Image (tube, rainbow, N blue to C red; front, side):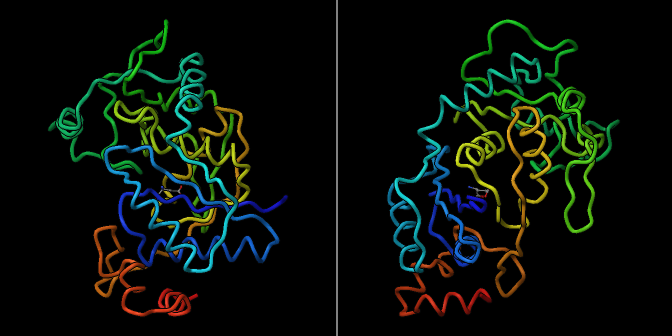
Length: 278
Ligand code: GLU
C-alpha cells in the first residue's frame, strides 16, 4: 500500500472544527489515493485523557462520515515500545537524565548575561544545565526525564539537509541552537510526544503525515529521531489552521465550536465541511 495516513487526536476535550478539518482532509486524501486512513488515540497523558472524550471522538468522526480500520492504536498500550527506543538511544549515549523543574529552566534560560530566553518548537530552549560533559553510562534511570543531547545527536545522525517546507530549509547544524535538548521521556508519562509520534507513525506504516501547520516546527525533530532510530521518514504536509473570527486558533476549551455543539444545533456533516472550506 503506497498511501497510509492517520489522524491522531488526544482525548482531552471535544473535537472542534480544526480537528474535523484535519481528519476530513487526511481521510479524503486517503480515499482519493486509494489508500488507508487510520485513527490513533494519543492518550499518553493519563491525567488529562478521559474515556468519554474518546467515545465522543469516535462518535463525531463517524457522524462526519469517516471510517477507519479497528481496533485503533492507543499510545497507552505502547509504553514498552517507547521504553525500548529510549534504551536504544541511551545505549548510543545520546540521552541524559534531567532533574530541572520548569522554574529552574526559565530562571537559567533568562539569566541576565544570556539575554532574552530563546524559544524553539517546545518553548524555552533548554539551557543545558543537566547535560553531562561526557555522556552517561550504566543503566538507564527509571521514571526519569530524559533529554536528547542535540549536539551529539546531530553529529551522529550523518545527514546534512533534512527538512524543507514552503522553501524554508532546516539544516541539522542549526538544531542545537534553534531547537536544543528536547525531552524524549517525561516523568509522568514515560515518553514525550516527539518520541511516541515517531514510533507510532513508523509502526503503523504511515507514508503521509497530514497535520496542522502548528506542528511544522516539530517535524525536524521527528526526522532527526527517525534517522537515529533507523526508521523511515514519511512525507509531511502541514495544513492551514482553522481560526475563530478574531484570528485565534481554536482550542479544546472552545465549546461553542465543538462538533458536538454543531450537531446539537441541527448542523449536517455537509455544513461542517462548508464551514472549514472543504
Ligand atoms: N495528538 C497530537 C495532537 O493532537 C497529534 C499530533 C500529530 O499529528 O503529529 O496535536
